[in-house]
Structure formats: C-alpha cells, structure tokens
Image (cartoon, rainbow, N blue to C red; front, side, top):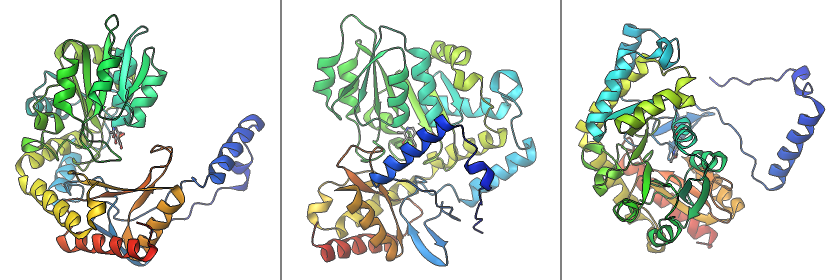
Length: 400
Ligand SMILES: Cc1ncc(COP(=O)(O)O)c(C=O)c1O
C-alpha cells in the first residue's frame, strides 16, 4: 500500500530564516542542474520483479546479488531470532547491547575471512567513517582511489590526515604518492560500486607492502567473489590490514563489520565512536546474519548463476557495448550526460524495466550512467529481455 504523506502547513514554514535560505538555495541549484533526486516508495523492491502503480517491472537495481533478501530460509532465520531474542538490542554494545548472537557472528566472520577480530557496525557507511576517523592522526598520509565510495571520501577529507587521491586502479600513480616519512594508509574498494570493475588487489598489496597500511572496502565483492564467497581479497589471495564487509548487499540484510588484528579490534572497541555510542544491531539480525554466512558459503550455485546471467547479458548486447562491461553483477552503461541517462532509464521503465540512472555527484561529471545489477534471483529470460530492450532503445535513438 502506498501512503501519501501530507506535510502540515505549519511545518513547511517553521524553519529559521538563515536555514530556510540555505535550504531553498541548495534545492533550487540542484533543480537547475537537473539533478533533483526523489524517493519512490516501492513494495517488494528487493525481488527480481515487483508491481508499482498497477504495472509489473523487472528490477535491475538491487544489490541483493545472491537473492538472499527474500529467501524463505533467511526470513525464517530472522523470525526465529526474533522469537528467541526479541526485537531491539536495547543498548549500545559496551553497555548491554552486545549479545551472544553478535559474538557468534563476529567469530564466524573471523574464521571465514581469516582475521583475529571483527567489529560490528550498523552500516558500511559508519564502519568506513569509524575506521578512518579513529585510526588517522595529523601528519598521516591517506591515499584513496579517486572512485572510492562517498563514506570513505568524506571521512578522509574530514579526518586529521592529509588526503590525496590516486588515479583509478593506477598502482604506478599510487606508488609515486607514497611518502617515506609519514604513516601511509591506502584505501580501495574491492569491486567499485558504480563501475563494477575490480581493484588490482594483488598489485596494490605488493606495492604497499611495508610502506602503508592497506584497507579494502569489499561491500560489493563479499559473497560474490572468491572461494566460498569470501570476497575480492580471497580471490586475489591478499590479506589487507583492514577489511570492511557490508551486510546490505550479498548478505541480503544490513549492517557491516571491520576485520582486523586483535590490537586494532581492541582499539576500535575503545575509541570508534560509531560503535561505542550507537545502539547495537538487533540480536535477531545478528542471528540471521550468521545463517546468511552459512548460505553464502554453501550455495555456490548462486555465484554460478550470476556468472551465467552475466554471460547471457553480454552476449545479447551489441559488441561495442559489451567491451566495457564488467565481470561482476554490477553492469554500468556509461551514457555521459545526466539528461540522456534519465531519458534512457525512462525509456526502459516504459518497457517495464526498472533501472536507476546514476548522476553526479554520485559519479564524476560527464559520466552519468545506468547502473544495472544482476542477481541470482533473476531468470535467464529476464536478463535476455533486459539486453534486448536496451538494444532496441539504442537502435531507436541512433546515438549509441
Ligand atoms: C563501496 C561501498 N562502501 C560502503 C557502502 C555503505 O554501506 P551501507 O549501505 O551498509 O551503509 C556502500 C553502499 O552502497 C558502498 O557501495
């Protein structure tokens, strides 16, 4: 059911004049750039297909890569957790919010990914911010891939360290930026969220060895790549000092963890404010997350299916397009102008296919795109339909 929220008259004009001016100016600027974003309330949007305003859409904009979000076994696990442990955790972890189910989840993550400690967070955004704010000091040099996620970029620029960006996936450029008299921290994503390409992790790891702390945010690689879904680092056979995994994508749930050594874990437990001063995730969620790990490890068929769907998608698009497509579930179609990206997304929607147009500032200027994501919940026929519809739109417009 869609609920239309009506804002009471009084609330719309109650903002203090200084803020009111700031807010209306920023909104007007965004609208003038054609970049206004809007929330669309959807029902069953975590499935491969959903109905919106009476029309059925194929959903190619979900990060639920393995199709776990609506898997009956995972739903049952969360329900079982709720029956056993109730709803909320009731407190932050260091007060009374840390439950045995959190401890079990941490232990499973450590064993699976090969670390001494796992520290849980409510989201990947807060995990990234916590790590950079807590570990970096004035005088440190933070080097980030220029396409890293907003949570990393923002934390880096607000941190006490000096931040520099290296060219995307350019290990040689990174090497020239490493300092000999500062503590270097290098941060990259495992799979880049908007491009779907993989970082050259083995080369990066070799380049920074003994010269920098390496942190990998594997939000989009965990569950999808590597043996038993252990992620990008497992696939590249590297062991970064800090590994961030998020639970809102392939795990089908939400939350995140930072994997690290014992001392770093103890340090984050003491000083990471996003961990210390925030209510712990519900124990039932931690319980469900432990079941999700088992499903990710066991269900190789989900990863195999993703590979098949990727191949089908690539096969059915024109060759000049497939040349730039990725080997992960994230399949961007870079269009360039924001206006044309929105037009393409609208044309797809008219054909019953839901794909989001991603525009600046989420992606660099001039690289607006369709961010298409495949999941193990899609059928081969649905992916063929996507590719063929895209091809028809390209041919009809004559611009691609
Ligand atoms: C690479 C990357 N890191 C971190 C996050 C934030 O994770 P969360 O959604 O759990 O806050 C995202 C979210 O899209 C992401 O793409």
